[in-house]
Amino acid sequence: MNRTKDFGRKKGCLRCGRKRGIVRRYGLHLCRQCFREIAYELGFRKYS
Figure: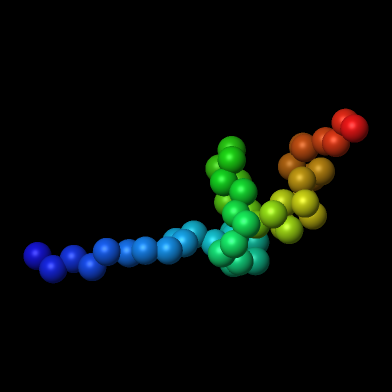
């Protein structure tokens, strides 16, 4: 049973595939840049 260990980032952004800066909260799996672009459409609002 020779299994290799996997290290590093597995999942990237679902929209652009970027591996860094992933927002995983609420199961979004978007990078922070894509999140900022479509946050309003997803229902996130800025109040201040």
